Image (cartoon, rainbow, N blue to C red; front, side, top):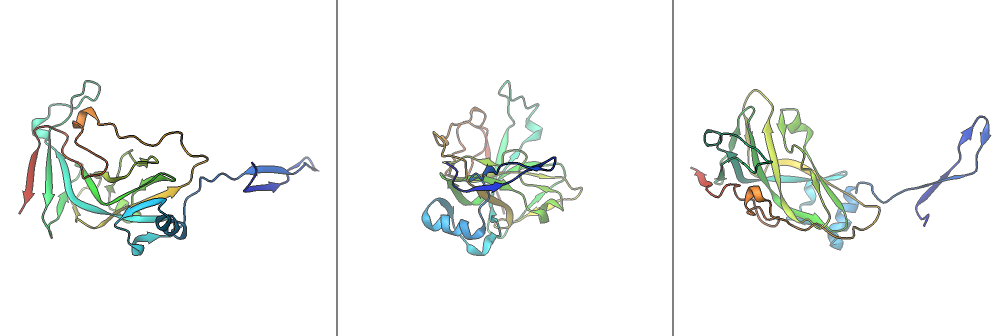
Length: 219
């Protein structure tokens, strides 16, 4: 099937070869025009969807008001092989409050936006304006498989030497959508992770990873 192919010739040693066909696969990033079309068609889910947050080839997502912090004073060591994980606390900010992320500190946050797609591969990216001030939005977990619908978890880290203020509903990252060469033979299936006790469901905001987590509210 050579639909969507380009035809070109190659010149080798003064000899022009026969036309060469290059298959242009369907795995390119969607433009803002195509993102809107896919949302209307139901191929992409974004809730809530706000056209003002569309970029030329991405969509800005917002930071939620829930964070998970490691209790370093109560954690001797983290050993993923031996299933030893940190004790954590969940903080829920009240309306109008902010969170000061100190240098070298890594926490988890969550998006306001619920999104996903069965047709497209979704990727999470940081924003250059935040990268320039030293805010890391995700360490490695930026790939969202087809069939995975979620409020995404942010791996937030301050690489600067001064605190960075995090404000709920700020534009924290952006997501892109790309096609695949063919549909997968199976879609993403949620499997509870042992080290977080199955508390982090893809369709709801994350809970703390320890059974004995504390729920704190900033006044």
